[in-house]
Length: 306
Image 1 (cartoon, rainbow, N blue to C red):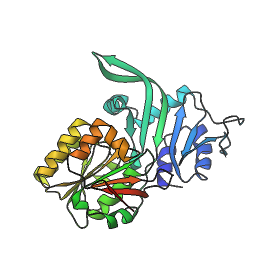
Image 2 (cartoon, helix red, strand yellow):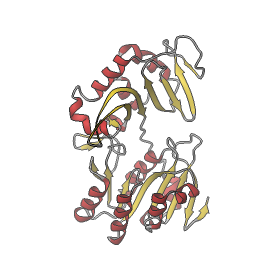
Image 3 (tube, rainbow, N blue to C red):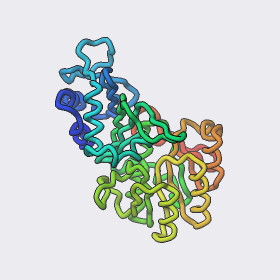
């Protein structure tokens, strides 16, 4: 079984853990596990939605008897374990909508918002946990690295589950043996950083775990002299400013963004602005058919290749 599966199941009550372990042994390509209060446990494998019975069997039918469901008290106990029984210590992460645990696994959270003076200050009555499964796939970036010059910058695009984070993790690792690479990892998804080191193999990268991306990029450029900065999920105004600053300093950027097509990128104001910074020579789209981290198209100066 994948090591990420072991990490995930350790947080679950025995009643759920045993059948899920059996189910996951037949779902090695699972990307998400979703637990909802009083609803059947769901496993997403590529683009398939699967359910698990209380005996650990897997089915794609919602109408099958004895589907494994999760109670409100079980959701609460899982959240407590995710927070090491100190919800207060994880309040900022919870308010951001997720908790990151070992192995780079991110657990998304849905519940009732508590607002104070127009700001989200807490999430109560948590009803859904979406467990995103991270994987460390060595050499998955070989094809892409053979087609681009990383010093010219690359924006890796794809739909959720297409393997963007997995791709840039392997790119960062491989590039670190040739270039000086810094990795701002705001949510610790690239590195699964814990106790002074990454749980994944990031080679010789310099890691800024938990830093806001802009602050990490600024610190890296001023003190670590990177050739390349690699980061995940850009997509707001401050990211555009960060790219412009890095470009002025002669630092290349490799980053990811959620997008399904070049038209999708161009139609959204902020992603269009990211492209127009000039930080990316290559716009790379990954396949959305479940082939994790596989290149679909590469646009160089808006001309498709491959």
